[in-house]
Length: 218
Image (cartoon, rainbow, N blue to C red; front, side, top):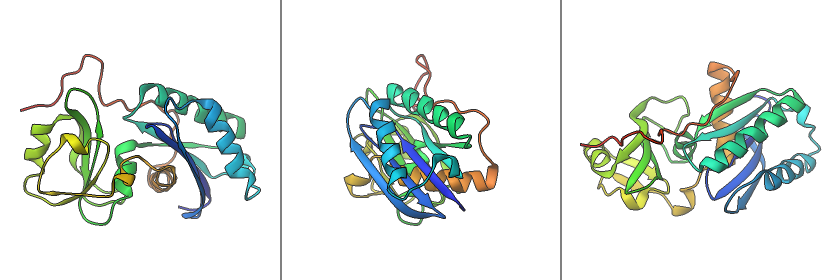
């Protein structure tokens, strides 16, 4: 987790950018906008680097949320990150948005979910908030019924925009302010994953659903 990392999230209505130095948060901008677009990302990146006087070429890496999330936001966010990476010659690490949400929760088993459509949710559960922890419930698109059966025997700290779709006594929901992914945790997760697995030679959106894919259901 060494060096200076830039984290960028554009997967939800609340986007943001953050800067970490050896795992310590230097600055974070939360941008509460709908229809997130590059005209808002790039000025935020410039501002967050300008404050501590950091040149983009001196970054150790750029972390970016891969999804699931807004299709438009994902495409714009990834294209922006790839442009910055090429211009600065800085490597990139992508992170699942569900992992990012889970990493912000307290210790123990953690559960993250993102509202989809028709009562469905993108969801995943992990053995701890550590970005390197094992999956307990694989990240996928689920019906509420399947999730409620899967987590009926455990206790999970939980967060995410899909909370209204999932009802289970085993879920201990965090403050709703934690439902959206934070760019600071994007940077944290990306740096941890890069230390273990290396950087990404290419990145693709993680939709977790093809347009004709069927939901996992009973």
